[in-house]
Amino acid sequence: MAMESRAYNNAAQSPPPFPATANTDIAPDTGVMLERMPPPPGPPVDPPPPGSALVDEVDKRILVVLRDGRKILGILRSFDQFSNMVLVDACERVIVGDTFGDVPLGSYIVRGENLVLLGAVDEAESEAGPPGLRRLSADEIRVAEMAEKQSNSLKRTMLARFDFLDDLS
Image (cartoon, rainbow, N blue to C red):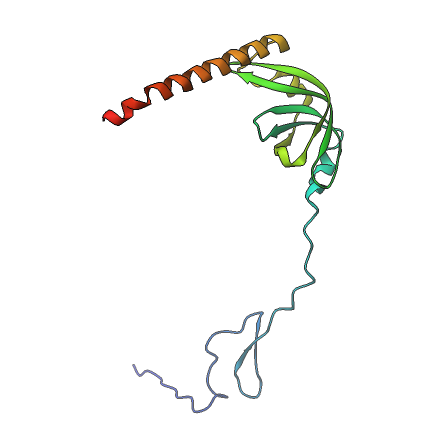
């Protein structure tokens, strides 16, 4: 079996180094592969203004989590470019252990710089509350919240008093 060998003397006879693709052409006179440049990008697109995502949430029930950890439920009535917002029929949802309660606030203004998280809430789920938690009245949940704060304060005080035990090891 004889192997056929073929020598290419010039560029016109040599095969292209790789097959032509949609982004390449072969020059007819030299046989050199030319790459087509992609079209220039369009004009830059400005990002949407910061508060524009809230447009879809107007007149819907939302849950807002604030920097201090409070959770506010209410109907978003208005907002501005700084994400400051007005909530109507607002209430603070307080969760203590396996219980929760809603403390009515009425109309409530949230300053945008205090906003951590915002999300739409289904009306039926909002009334039912978080699954697995028992609902308490506003007065009962405030008493439970104060008891939890006192308990946490006592724990911190005791840990601070016995801090010297860490040095003995």
